[in-house]
Length: 121
Image (tube, rainbow, N blue to C red; front, side):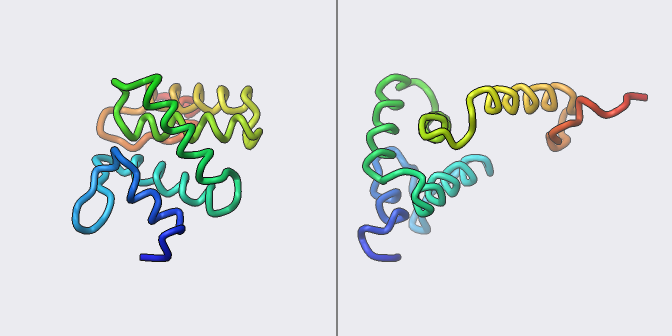
C-alpha cells in the first residue's frame, strides 16, 4: 500500500468499511464503483479528505439505518452537488432518467440509460 497519507490508506482505516485480508468487500458492483469514484474525486482535488470524512460522518449520523455504501453514495452526491460539480437540476434529471430506465428494463437484464425511449413492439 502507498504512504499512510494516501487516500486509499485512509479509506481502509475508516470505520464501517467491510474488509477482508485482500481489502474492501463489496456486496454489489455499484458499491465498488462508488468507492472508487470517491477516491478518484479526492485524488483529483475535488474535495479534501477531512471534508469527506466530516460529510460521511454527518450522513451516517443522520441516516444510521441506511446501508453503509448507500451512505457513502449519498455523501458523495452531496459533496459533489455542494461544490457545484453537477447542477442540482441536471442531477435530478439524471436520477429521473435512471429511474425510468430501471422501470423499463425487463427483470434480469442490465439497466440501460435511455431504454425507456426505445420503441416497444
